[in-house]
Length: 339
Ligand SMILES: [Zn+2]
Image 1 (cartoon, rainbow, N blue to C red):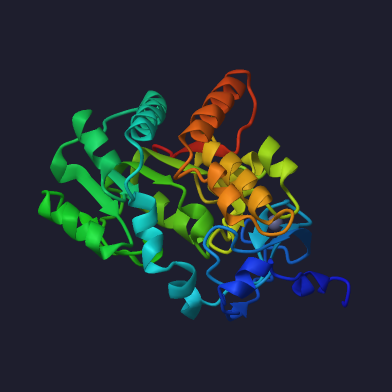
Image 2: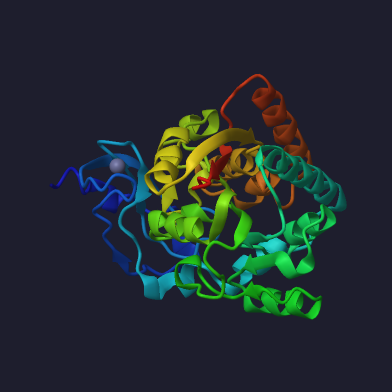
């Protein structure tokens, strides 16, 4: 017991003590949410290297049966406002460099095209979960989905209000699990980019989406791939895909496929996207915390600030994925049966 719990004694980097990050309440998560087993081994231990919201040491564990990776223990529900501070959302939608924005738009178009290529049948209704400023709603509108068929879910009320004002009425400030605003069997396409790793019960989310889809409908989700080169290189603590303590589930191609098929879907494609921001955060964390404390040096690898690094790693991952490498961001497409 003593040995298995040694991770709790990992000292926080000195910077966390200097900014007085609090120790927050946690809750155990003893069961694998992919296969239900409760035997696991330690996988990684780390801290909130990005935002320093708390000084807890956090542990990822790996299921001994299906190899799914999850955060255990994880932040107690009442601490969510601590680990998602108000600046978290502004930080995501914050102004980014115009060159980076163009590159991002190009990558978005590429991703949408991949999804459209796989989708079969009509495309009159679309839901984006975690729709942010609505950029994917607009992209699908341009491709012919009528505005009356566009749906969005987003947890930031101010962003939802903005979308209502710009004429998108079916955007709701609700969690997937609690949402009752979307009729069963009504959606042709659902996308969920970088959301499932944040939820407490991924299987419940997948089941809810399955219910919303029309027969033959497509579900496209993107999530970090824990079975990638950068995840392996930085596995012990610094991998950017951990996003500690906000990522609660880390999938690999086989575990995400199992989650989908166990909940009714047929997996029709898995494509690997560029994981440039994970590369950059991994290096950021290593440089900033690896040998003493170097907050300024870390800025060179902050994906929000370093255009050079962003371009380099995007190119690197595009090249690798062309040769079949499994990068750290995977796009998985599931189909609901026709019957
Ligand atoms: Zn499992």
